[in-house]
Image: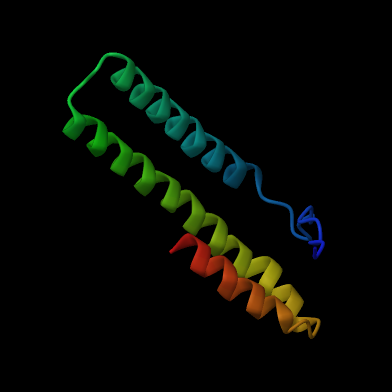
Length: 100
């Protein structure tokens, strides 16, 4: 079996306090939405209402992903390409496919 490298990288460029607060706020809102969905299921609520909330969570999570991707491209990817690490572009494409 092939061993995979640990993905425990550290950012070269720290996230700003404003960025961290923005992401924390978004993630906390998503957690609240997920708890709401759990409650809806526990309360045997209408499927259509639950699916609407699931779609909202997916959209919110995608937004967080795109914010992180944007930051990654503007910092980590740019820095690596400047250092001649072209393999970072392949990694970027793989990450973009995962976000869909």
